[in-house]
Image 1 (tube, rainbow, N blue to C red):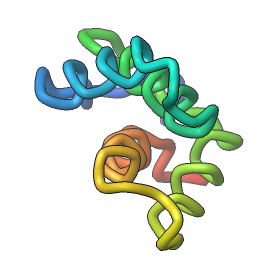
Image 2: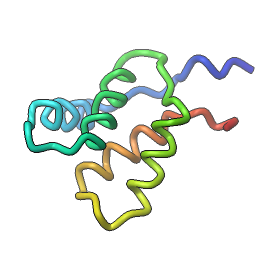
Image 3: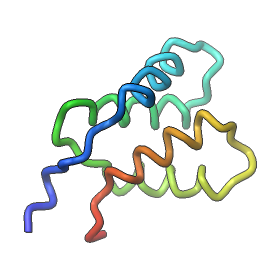
Image 4: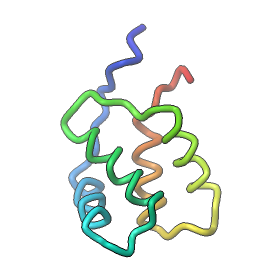
Length: 84
């Protein structure tokens, strides 16, 4: 099985959110990392790496992050390697 390619891509809604976060000087490093990952998966077969999978999972389990960061985390996790 080829785990290097991903048929899922980032939606336009998430891509727009990711772009806004990357342009926001007050956005957290975590939000920026998730935004970068989401954009790297826009119209490509890129797949979330294990380090970012861990970060996204922690974001979703925490009350510390806002709705937008959690949306990005969900998108990034949905494009992860299901075999990991």
